Amino acid sequence: MKNIKKIISILLVLSMIFVLVACGNKTTTVDTSTEESTEETSEESGDGETAEAGDDFHIGIVTGSVSQSEDDRRGAEAFQAKYGEDRVTLAIYPDNFTEELETTIQTIVNLSDDPKMKAIIVNQAVQGTTEAFRQIKEKRPDILCIAGEAHEDPLEVASAADLSLRNDFVARGYLIIRTAHELGCDSFVHISFPRHMSYESMSRRVAIMKAACEEFGMTFEMETAPDPTTDVGVPGAQAYILEHVPEWIEKYGTNSAYFCTNDAHTEPLIKQLLKYGGYFIEADLPSPLMGYPGALGIDLTEEAGDFEKILAKVEAAVVEKGGADRFGTWAFSYGYTLSAGLAEHAVNVINGDSEITDIDDISKALAIYSPGANWNGSNYTNADTGVKVENDVLVYQDTYIMGNPGHFMGAADVEVPEKYFTLK
Image (cartoon, rainbow, N blue to C red; front, side):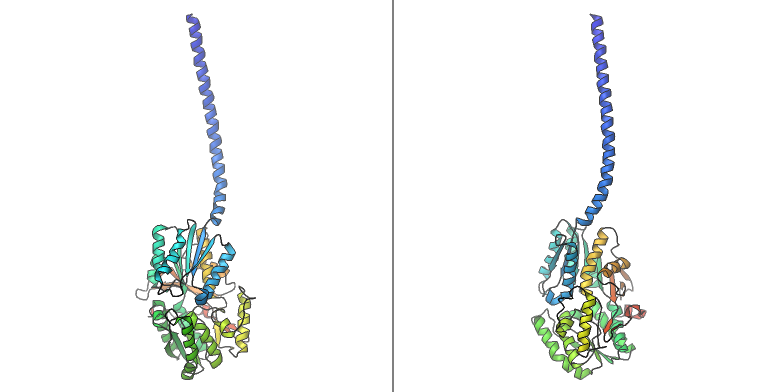
């Protein structure tokens, strides 16, 4: 009996050892295969996730309306057409943005409600953009906030935006006058209104233009026109320009060059200068589409999106109306290029291909929408301290004067005297 119990006990022990060994071997096998499987899956999904990340995020672009800032809007639409409406959301701030500040802010902030939103570009970054960016950063610090052609104080905008990019008001303040002088102008007339003159960039540009006129022996004049965002609206502001250009030409002569700070003023100004004389070097935000189609009465529907064809058609119409060698522009629209180019830059940054404030990376993105154009630029310099602001970038394109034939002025290759960068 004892032997039988002993045998049974031995058999039980042996069976338990067998089960434990079997389980141990099974666990080891499963763990090994799981680790290998996990590593393989991780490697495969790593590539997959990178590719998916390149597609699985949204971009938001806010611009003015077609009536106020057509080029800005068309550039946003071009970017949306390239990447798709499912990935790119467009919004429009009010025409009367100074009176509808809360609506402007909310329009921008609303884009951050999209959980997939990774970048919001505002072009032009009108009043309210800085506050909107601050609100966005409070709840979604992962979203890139990019300001195009900011209207607010540069240092304030830079404090809230990841990147602020504007036309180089310093270099252009000098180069526009220099170009007018090279074309034979003896006076320069600056047209604006108090709201714009309260902007640091525009007031500094006026100071630079005055100094440049002195350098080149030209007279500098200022005229005031109605602000389109006030009660007179765009029609009233444009009617004022139409009425007063003939008076200005009589007062300052046909060798005078004209510059206005508002998009809505541009079309009637060009129209009357073509009729009565005078020069127009380039718009505040230059483009063959800025003011020229309406002033010339030409339809550019067939040429839409092709700036080489657009420029050729505009130039032919300018020459036909006797404006050869008196009217200029940038070959590619600044507003169009900025809306699309800054959004393209945001994509490159999100994908890890570019640095947000790198000027070469920014130029690379802009060049996609302005092939062959010669750009130049620098960081914004604080006139009070002389310190450059890392995330505030100023850019400009060479000036093209329309004629038979037309020609670039080489402005992007001119070295602007250092004294102008801190003049105010």
